[in-house]
Image (cartoon, rainbow, N blue to C red; front, side, top):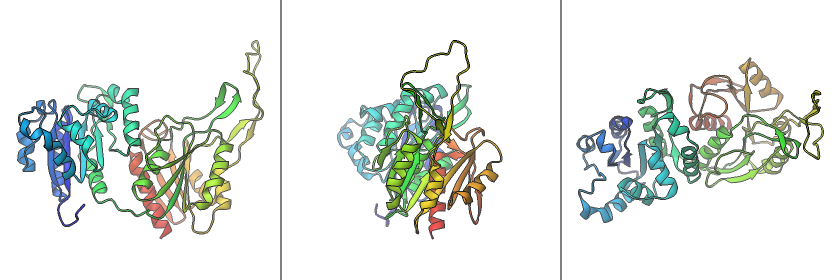
Length: 400
């Protein structure tokens, strides 16, 4: 991007009740120094008159009514090249499905398919639509292709329901836009190792013991580190997430697998972030055949301790390495986390109460406290991607 001119933002607006909030987003982008052109879908025009966006932006609002057919053959390419950033807010399930499938059947889907600029999506829809496995799969596919998301918040929805799907605050979307427009390569030259997801400890050929970790926090850290210029190695347990583009993936299953993968990859890394959730115990023996019911008798399972992955990393930490751990707790969160910081030779530990609403497992948000030897920083409820960037900011501070 030519830094001597204003940044160019293409704002895509799709058909949802939150479309009116795109007007405020446009003004915030302009206040931040950006020039904005708007593309509206046909359904978006039912919620907000194109004249509103034309008046605010100073540019014609490009719509899907094909009222300028003579411009159709080149306009989407011109806008795709003009953009330094492409943001779609609000984004419906429909536009995300089109993007994930490569469908280009209107001006918005055609232009976003043609652009080489970073793409940011801010979804907004009914909770059922947002949580539908198809929508989640499409979002995972888009993330794996490098598309950025400002995840929706939870609240009262236009349909009368209360749940996830409410458009993220426009201030947060605007901040994300400027972060992408002025993205710094502050991790360039660093090799970052991130672990993510659960472990599985086999009980017999068909059963295992595991935990509720989704891997979303670790994957968000890997994506954030990649976007900030780092070379990223992601050690991942069994998760239902797509591999982020530009990241080297190393899969693992058990805690012992994770330990071996860490010991193999850690020596060449500058930063190690242990966000995975390894099991503390595993069955002493794995049955060769499927275990059957015992005719009403109690089933006794003998467990043995697994190796402590974080403690092993801490003991073998090399000069110049920065080591970050996580403490997912249910009580005395800060006390337990502070103890782990010292015991496991961590430089930084991320503490969170997994019982708190909006934090912990299976959600896209988190509430954490960053604890280092020189202080604590409590972060509010925010997206896991925002938490990831805060963690990396603190890593850079500690390395300085």
